[in-house]
Length: 127
Image 1 (cartoon, rainbow, N blue to C red):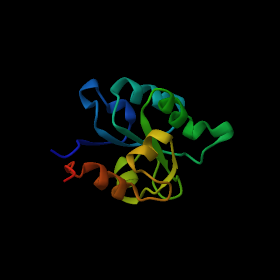
Image 2 (cartoon, rainbow, N blue to C red):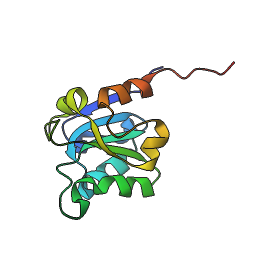
Image 3 (cartoon, rainbow, N blue to C red):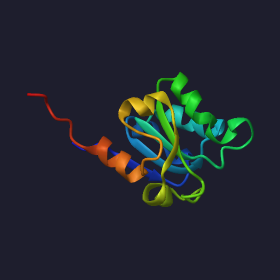
């Protein structure tokens, strides 16, 4: 069964029933967004880096979620519209990834659509 994909303009739209999904959002990757992702516990949360900002505020969610064992990445604000999850999915290219996201195969410079496609592949048994 393919991994569930939730495409939400705001990470606040996630619910506990979304646990384990791939969450592609239009939200910035700040701490306030991270708290919503933590409550829902998706397999991967995708945010907008919002230009990264002062002291890395636009990607602070990545380290916070890593500390909770959750994968997260951000797309470059120059390629995807902030607040528009469809743009994140269709136009987004990852600019930052936490270690848990890298362990899933997500890479900096990778189109989000490609990362999602790989994660949605049905698992195959080794022979």
